[in-house]
Length: 268
Image (cartoon, rainbow, N blue to C red):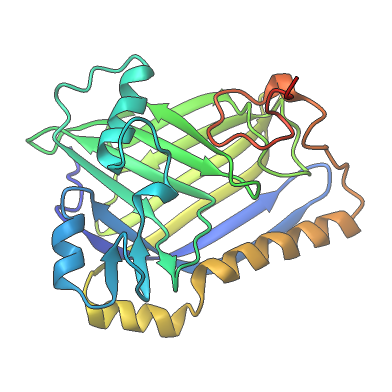
């Protein structure tokens, strides 16, 4: 069994998107993610000058940026989500999160990943937390584990892009982060791959020096990510791809947190 990285860290990553149909479209860019042990957040906030929990800083982690259930604590909230999905959480000891930080107070996190382990570092489950540009969020709980990765094939039932059919299927393949990171999230249409997405990277030590290097190598990370999302959307629009309206298929937008008014029940 491959063991996970034992503590919080940085992953410098390459993101790749490759649309296969109805027209080919491919791009990639470089980013960095934080790999955070949720039990270490307070100590990291105390030890680091450039990273804070629930406080403004160059880089920060705010619990409210993630799905909020009955707690203001991200670990407790994600455990509640896992339990509500029918998974026994009694053996979960450690929860580690792969996420973008807030950068100078701004956050946009298209997808982040929680990995849950027992006290002996045995992987028990994972959660992909997907966020769209309407700031809606949806969790996908992965329990099937084979050798070194979690796998889940599931109906999307979430509005991710105006150029994606709501009836597509997500195929999540999450290898355990070690010195290297490898994640694939593909879109399937009628069982065939329509879009390929990968996130690959290398682990770095988390320190103020490393955070400063990342600030210089990836300036205004989260603002850049939201700009690139809209730039690629514009490119797809110029290629004449069909546009799916947000409010057209409310029935296929299920299990959504922070629902946009387009799918919220109308006031009487």
